[in-house]
Amino acid sequence: MPEIQAFRGLRYDLGHVGSLADVVCPPYDVIDPPMLDELYRRHPYNFVRVDLNRIEPGDDEADNRYTRAARFLKTWRAEGVLFQEADPAIYVYHQEFTWAGRSYTRRGFMARMRLSPFGQGLVFPHEQTMSAPKLDRLMLTVVTKAALSPIFGLYPDPKLEADALLDQAIAGRTPLEARDPWGAVHRLWPVTDVDVVTELTAIIGPKPVFIADGHHRYETACKYREEVYESGFLAKDHPANYTLMMFVAMEDPGLVVLPTHRLFRDLPSLTAEELTRRLGDLFVARAAGTGPDDAATVWEDIETSGDPSALGLFTREDQRWTIVQLTPAGRAKMEVVAEDHGSEWRELGVSVLHRLLVETILGCSGQSSTQYVHKLEEVTEGLHTGQYPMAALVPPATVDHVRAISLQGERMPAKSTYFYPKLLSGLVINPLE
Image (cartoon, one colour):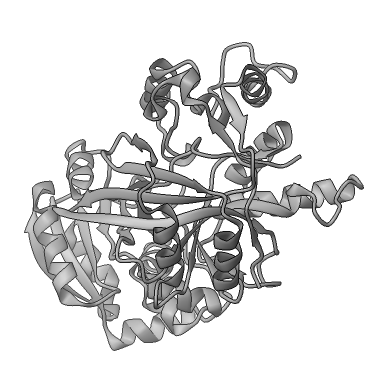
């Protein structure tokens, strides 16, 4: 069963830094170069200097982005910019945001959780990972000896018992607060009450945890634990046995999963008619619009179809949109080309897109230089540049998909889910020494 603990986290001293919003940052994997520069300018203590220190001319083995990150973290602790919690705490974390005209509040809490390799406990992944991000995060963990940002975990709690307990614990208390670049408001309450932590531990203990976001960081934490073990320093209570986890109930009404659409650079430039001919009897194809600006209309059509495998395909050659859906022959073909996966995996739109359409029918990988976006405006803007011979609007995997596929020991293709909004980095840090 997952073992969670309160811990003495590192936090910013607002007397040193002023506004919390000026020093926290989005997670490393959504920060592009312009945002990195803006975060550097925003405040000399912005956490991006630790979590994603930029590459500088003249970097070498002794002075590079990782060694600078470690120096910043050490210096800020020494100067009192960061302080360590006096007592072990769990950190209630709420995010208020708006999406598609609706307001949401996602509720959860951060604690440290004992690591268990996938397949050896009740922690389940749902997406494939890539080696480069894991190496980057491992090098950063080794030099900083800290879990810098939380992994996003989902757990079943139909009665929302944990949220009810924590709502009572923070009632009437003023939170720490920050607004992110996308307008979401993030609120944090440290909770040190031993009775509350004990009761929370009892609620979470028997439940499985599904990684929603942060697969690379979780696998990195397991690798770091192995390295500490091999060094001979890993006692049972060593902090490297744990990682920083954000826990959100699967039934939380503020849980929003966005689609991840694809803008392909490497696919062949085809007309809609040529694409339909290649699809043969594996898909039913119908014309759905003309020009990049019809993306919203096509997406509405896909959403109302109720088919999780329906796709909206744009062909640059003739500026046409085509909606495609699997036929019985297509489902039979998916069983053959994806025989290593179960039925739930084969029904996902992202699985149909990559395994059947891109890899099998078009004979391409479709991954190396693909642009992943979430908003329809981003799809439209990208297509107007003329850079992409093909684009795909893809229905998102649901929380139920995550649960079912994870419990079968399978992983979805990369970029299958996007839980919005992202968790901020720098709210609290979990020391690993």
